[in-house]
Length: 218
View 1 (spheres, rainbow, N blue to C red):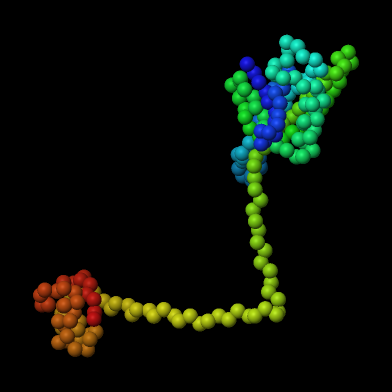
View 2: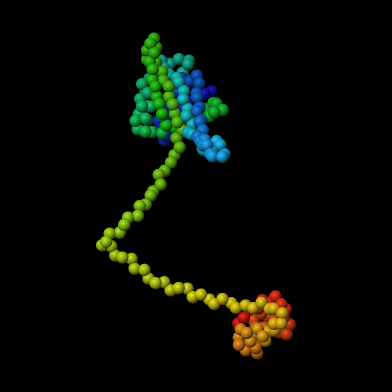
């Protein structure tokens, strides 16, 4: 069985609609944009859909009868004053619609309310209402930097010591005709220091080196 409920978001007060509407309309418009691009033509930019809107019409009866679906019936003025009070206080309302494949239990805002009293049905108040789904949001804090007054103390920057850069490791690539003696003579100024190069590069036999080998220089 269908049930429709309206109440404030904290659930402290609300009511079940006494007369179910003959139909309920869901409006779920998109928010896509189209643009004309030179040499391309029309393009479509997909955006998130707009907030769902729900609208329906019914009435608040003055007297009870078999057509009343709620367990408790109040006077039409009770329902109308509740809705008006919620709108005045800018309340979010919880709308619950059960018993349908389109079940809903979410927060909405009341966008419009129209009331009508028909001749011959004195006391019954007909209404149409439109709800829009509420999407919570929060404002971001923005901090604005202000200029310091002339009386403020200037900021003194201390000279930070520069990091000591380690000297780059010298290297030598062996070419045809090279010997460790010649390499030591070239870089160390003394060919007899070839053993230092051999030890640094783990050369077992200093007399055997090959073109293309890369040696570190002490």
